[in-house]
Every structure is written in structure tokens, then in C-alpha cells.
Length: 334
Image 1 (cartoon, helix red, strand yellow):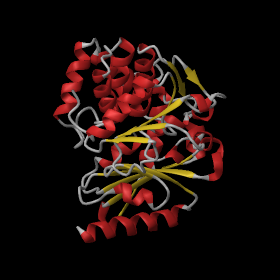
Image 2 (spheres, helix red, strand yellow; image 1 turned 30 degrees about the vertical axis):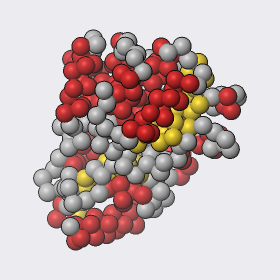
Image 3 (cartoon, one colour; image 1 turned 180 degrees about the vertical axis):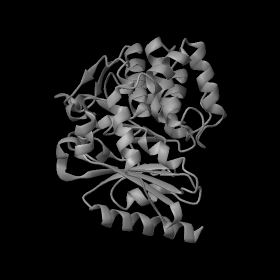
Image 4 (cartoon, helix red, strand yellow; image 1 turned 45 degrees about the vertical axis):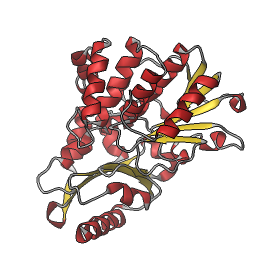
């Protein structure tokens, strides 16, 4: 049985999953391991219940990150279904509706949305909102719902949920890792997850372009205010020279946050092809006194206390000044 979350909201979500016949399952832009794992698992759970369930990922999100290429995408659609009015929408790991590229299509009058998430700054945009900020990942919430629905995890479901779990807990090293996360891992291993194989798929078998891009990211590191803010950038030319896909930047920021004395790490990256003229900024906090989700929200983004992000048109100097001011202000208040 699940250990966290509002009981009333959980009951309403369970009722919605049981009662509706047709679904479309959705997550946020630039889907990470938790987003994809939760999405795939929920789609498979609903299919196992005999539901008509489509899994939506916008065509602009492809190619997906290399490390998740082994996860199956059965039931995938790349454009919102024409009969959207007939489907209950299940949003997973999505802090606000605008974080989905097809938000306008989904934000229609009368839409029924089940919003399942663990971001503490979730805007509660759903008809029913199951937001459990104490859960280590959205996959943990999906795992609990699966048990309550009486669905036995298939190999696909178990693998997908395990990917969501290990990526959002940093292989069980982040502070969001609780006892429930380890119990979930045990349950998934008992269901047949090959831990070593999943680790190899997600964290090894790295394409050379990803290593080359990491080298460029590390060569561009700058530190500010005595190292409190550690930043790097990846330009369009870095991707081209590395023969790297945009998703290969995943993991670069983890090297920065591990540097001694760093309170906040930031990765600023161009979009391949100059998409929409905006740069993506990823933030990670190593200091408990700093909540990077507050910084991201000021620029229309969001996330967790220790991991957040936003898009910006600011140039490098303006962005550096903004981040330095925000980090200094939070440290001064602590």
C-alpha cells in the first residue's frame, strides 16, 4: 500500500482510472527518466486493465535521450488524438500544464485531467490532483496506484518504474530517497528487474558524442562568488563539433554540483537548430539553504528544491548576474 499522498485525492484518482474507458497519458517536455518511466508504466497499467490508452509524446521531443532508447513505446502517438474530448487525460510528473508542448490542445473546456506528480510547486491544474511532494519520484506514486489497482507488474512496467526510481533518486543517493523508495526497488526486483542490465543501459554504453560533449562542458566551467555558483555552457557549435544530440547534455551538470564549495550548479545550453531562440537552464542545489525551484519559477520554469530549470532569452552576462543575485539572496536569508 502507498505510504504518502492525500487519501481523498488518491481515492479520486483511483476511481477515475477505474471508471473511465479511454485515456491519453501525457508528461512534460524534454522527458527525463522519471517522466518516461511513469508514462510507459501508466500506459501499460491502463492497458492491463482493459482500457483504451494512448501515450502522447510530441513529435518535437524526438530523438529521446539515448539512455532511454531501450524502453518500449507501445501505444505511442505524436500528435494529440482527434477524439480528445472522449479521453481522460493523465498528466504525469508535470508541474504545470504549460510544460507540455501541446498544452493548448489539452487545456480545453470540460477536459478531465488526472494530475499525478511529486513536484512541490505543482500548480494543481488537474480536475483531480494527486501531488505527493514526499514521494521520491512520480514513478513511486504510480507504483502505489498500480498495487491498489491490483495490477501485477509486467517486465515492461517493472523496468520503466525502476528507471524512473533510480534516475530521480540519483541511484538512491539524493536526499529525496526514503524507505519507501527502497521498498519499491525491492518489489520491482522481485518482479524481475535485472538491476545490472538497467544500470548498464542507463549509465553505460555511452556514445562517443556524449563523452565529447561532456569534455566541452567541463572546459567551459566558470565559478563565481568563491565557487558558490558553478556554471558551464554548451553552444550550438559544441553540439556540432561533438556530433552530439541535444539529449547528450544529460548528466553534465552532475559533475558541477559535486565540486567542493558549490551551492548551486547551472548548465546553460543552446537548443539544437536554435529552436525558438531560447536557451535551456538547468539548476542543481548542493546546499540545503538554496531552493532552486524558486529561482526557476521567476523565469517561468519550475522543479524541485534541489533540481529545477527554465528557458530564457537572457545573454550570458545577464543570466550570470541574475543567478548570482538569486543565490546570494537565499543564502543571506538562511
